[in-house]
Every structure is written in structure tokens, then in C-alpha cells.
Length: 329
Image (cartoon, rainbow, N blue to C red; front, side):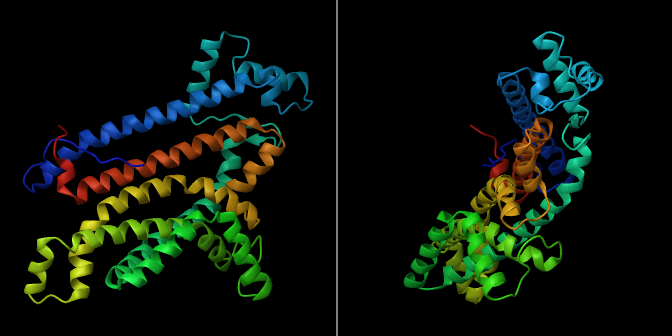
């Protein structure tokens, strides 16, 4: 989960001071993100060497290739050198964005990923947009409701968090594609084809973020500033949206950062259920064909997405809440 940035206090509202104050925490978080990526890259290196058979056979998916291709692979991966040299060469290739070639698809892994990533990112983008919009709306509505209605909201949220996305996707397909033909069943690249996959993927995050937002709003409603706002004649809707919701956003932003970082794993499953183009189907076929260079690239892409979300949420939190700028004890 995204942490909260803590650094020295910025200048008293001076833009130049704020800009200078954010440099250090951003650099710290970027360093932490680099450490996470290095750990993921090192783990994949160790797993490749630990798999049964020679590393060349693993990378070639144990397929029969010409001696020239095998010799080129050994030279590219420095497999005749010591383990330390192999490791440094491996990190150097990753730093250059060189993931090698898919020996099943006979293309560079970067080209294979570039053809599929936009489809997955479209699904992730709509899921995050729906999560933010629906969570804000449902949190405000449920926070203003009575105890019984809030209990009903909490029960539905607990159910949605527990339901696996692939199971919900199958239910949505049965209801709104097979029974009521309102949306394309599978494999559609049209905007309408995004509706059901987005709902299946966003249901759990919406329930989780809504619950955190509502609890934060209920706590904020007991603060003295709410009474002050009401005595000034501000309406209840304005009190909830302008004052209470703002104080509840900080913990919800942390949860949203963690959810956003883990969405790629859920998107992989949803793409398979709905037979959508994207990283999910690519991973499935790569695992089935033992195309390890592609699998390694997807693992590192997942780690990169997670750390980018974490850094983004930390920076936004730092900018939104002055309390997070206080120096850590």
C-alpha cells in the first residue's frame, strides 16, 4: 500500500518552497520504487536459473531451433560466463528495455507487449475512473443515510469485496450478454465491450474505497469544524462534499493507490474471461507455451505499474494534505 510521504515543512505557501520541498520525498520514493523493481528483476533471474534444465532450454521454451539461433541466445544472455556476469548482463539489458525475443512468436518481446498493453491500459483506465466516481458518489450518499441503510451498504460492500472478479464477470456475461443481449459477449474491441469487464473488475475496488471513504466521513462529521460550518448556514450537501469528504480523502487515496497497483493482476483474469485482447491473453498463451521471456517481461511490467501508482498517490497525498509534510519523528 502506498505510504505517506514525510519530509521537512515546506515554505509557508510559497510555490517555490513547495516545489523545492517535494523534490526530496519524490527522490526517496523513486529510490524505493527502483529497489522494488530491482527485487522483482532479481527474483525472476533466480527463478529462471532454478528451473529444471539448462537456462538456454528454458528461454527457448524447449523448442527445437537451429544451432545458430541457440548460439546467438547463449551469446546474448552471456550463458557461457559466470553467474555474476550473467546477472549484470541481465540487469543491463533490462535497464535498456531489452527483454529479448519471444522464441514462440519470433518477435522482440517489446513489440509483442506494445501490441497488447494499450488494450489492457484501456481497461485499467476505465476501471480506475469508475472506481473514483462511484466511490465518491456512494460514500456521500451512504454517509448521509440512516444507520440501517449504511448497514445495507456495508453488507453489499463486504459481499463485493469477497466475490472473485472472474466469477462476477461470468455472472454479468450470463445476465447482460447471453440472457439480455445488451452488451457484446466476448472479444469485442468496441467501447460497449468495455462495460462488463470494467464492472467486473471495478466492483471490489468500488466497495473497498467506498467503505473507507464513508468511515472517514462519519469520523469527520463529529469534528468541531462541521458544527461551525452548519452554524454559518451551509447546507448539508455542501458540508458533506466541501468539508467532510475532503478530510476523508487521505486514507481513501492510500487504499486507491494500493488497488490501482494490483489491478493489473485482476485485469489479466478478466481479459481471459471476456476473451479480450491484452496482456492477460498474452500471459496465458506464453505460460502454456513456456515462453519465458514474455512472462518475465509481464512480471516486471506488473511491478512497474505497482510502484508508479504508489509514487503517484504519495505525491498527490503530499500535495493535498499539509500534515504529511511534517518531518517524521
